[in-house]
Length: 195
Image (cartoon, rainbow, N blue to C red):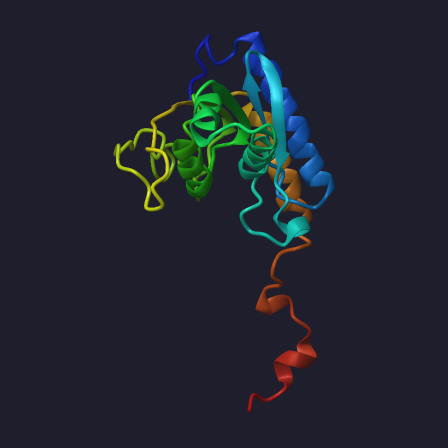
């Protein structure tokens, strides 16, 4: 993906470096190294990193962690659903890897203004690689009567090589929390008859 001058603006690079720091924290904790920050008025107001293994919750992606922190904070100070939606519409997300389908849908529902990401997500990407949920605005209410889905601007390729290298280092070491393939299971189990 070509990187335009807008994508390499110093602020975008600075915020993506902060997201990469979160991804490194995820890697240090044996999680898939994806990290993010949410920015409002040129200030980081939340950060997140992948934590599905730590939390034993498959939805604990970096974006969801950051969104949950803001929701909790804004609900504590008494913001209404409409005020929270307005706040999200003024925020930008920087994430090291293209949001997956789940996260892209969530970002559309909360009404995020803009997303910048590092590398593409060729297996699960929701912002163009597999689906384009950032552009699919039906204008219909969600099934629970919530906010309308909203399109958001999405730009990839910022510090993509750094994000890719973190992911490579994770997968080269082997996922210590992954499922052990049948070929690697102890041979004594393989020789036992099945009843």
